[in-house]
Length: 323
Image 1 (spheres, rainbow, N blue to C red):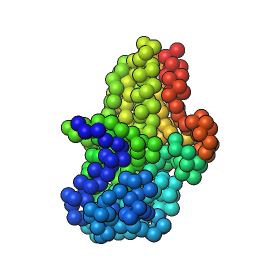
Image 2: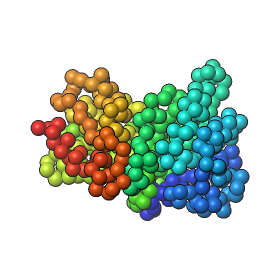
Image 3: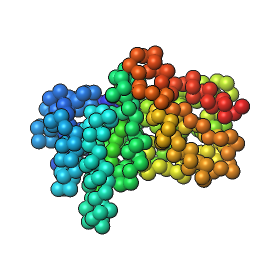
Image 4: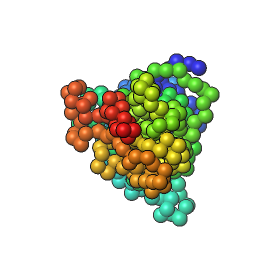
């Protein structure tokens, strides 16, 4: 094992992809000379040159569309969108083109495109740069949505995404970039399944991305009070791994979804609907969720904290399921 940050794990994945396949190139705003807005791509321009690490104009619509064209032309582009709110400027090439071409061509064309973007709040970047829109894009058939929450997934998911013949979106929770830990290089990573991160028997905490650490911390606190919480990391938001989710809920008989998205129309709502559809008679309590407050994310630190799912709220909701 080696000690590393989430940011460095992502960089290792990028470096290995660029070194291992001449078709792979990286493009986006400030990914080259500046080293990336969040320093994920630092040093890659010097190592691989301007043909492989390309700074783009400030036009998400333009360079995401160029990535779609490059993928259709046989290359393996990795497109970085600085933050998830800017992906809204690129919805046309993502939703109307990349996601649909396999279907509309009768299987003749695929779009092996990878788009990386920073998502989530918790860093005082205010309302315009604190969105969690993974659930929006997970609504779209034809896209695969990944949310790496561990060092191993941060490093290993990229290679698997590049090998996928269809478009893959990687959502990197910005508050995780400085997370540091031991990277287990023997762990097998996939982009198909959810993963139980902590076994338990009394209830299942379902989380992903930036909420996984909070769910694990809540489970640890609950354990101190004699409550055994299983923590499930979704990892893949589309297609959802129903089998692993339902197996866990059938075992614990209670489910609490922790989602940084807003409650209305949330990914949490979809997960709860599937649990009710498939495991209603296994439940001992109605499924519950802890989501962000339905307000634009505040800038002030104390208000931002109050608006986001936090460990005390998760613990309180878990106890409510058991009462």
